[in-house]
Figure 1 (cartoon, rainbow, N blue to C red):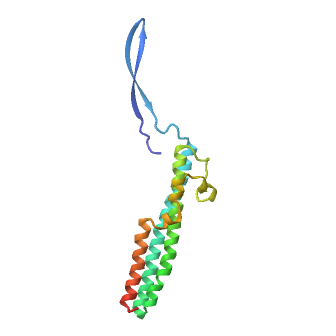
Figure 2 (figure 1 turned 180 degrees about the vertical axis):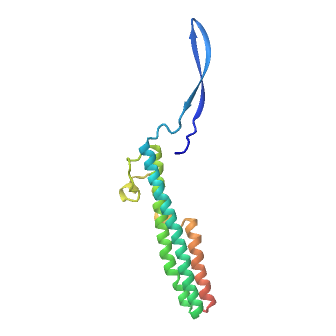
Figure 3 (figure 1 turned 120 degrees about the horizontal axis):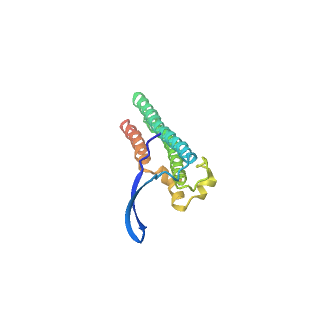
Amino acid sequence: MPRVELLWRAIEVAVGAHGKEASVVVTAAVDPYAGFSENRIKHLEMVQGVVTRLGGNGFLVKGWAVTVAGAFQGFAITRENAWLALASSLPTCLFWFLDASYLRSERAFRLLFEQIRRGTAEPFFMNATARGYLESLDEPARASLGWPSTILRPSLRYFYAALIVTAIAVALALGI
């Protein structure tokens, strides 16, 4: 378990002694994690594990997207078939949607993490992608989890657009 740094605060206390006022400085240790029970910390760890797993899945999807697009375009060049290069755009779009799905879920679990941290989430609730949970969020949070805003995130938009532009460039080079 990591060492918790304690915040030390000096508190000046006036103490009356037989009619005389004396000033005494008392140093108290205040634990910033005092409001976190073991169960809440365990819940945060569980949600963090899901977020980590979803981030890893998004990374793997990007790797597969490059591999499949590269294979299509390589075969297109070998066979001198421009349509095969353009066909690589279909699996690229499917990978784009799958990656957006992982990113949307990851963002929903990050919102849940924040609710747990503040103590406003139901104990051990883990269904952050359920319709009921998503509808219970405030408007800015719901907007950030919408499909258009997720699919068009710069991290996805530029990556998958580059794969599609490459497919078009290969098709044009092959004389479509």
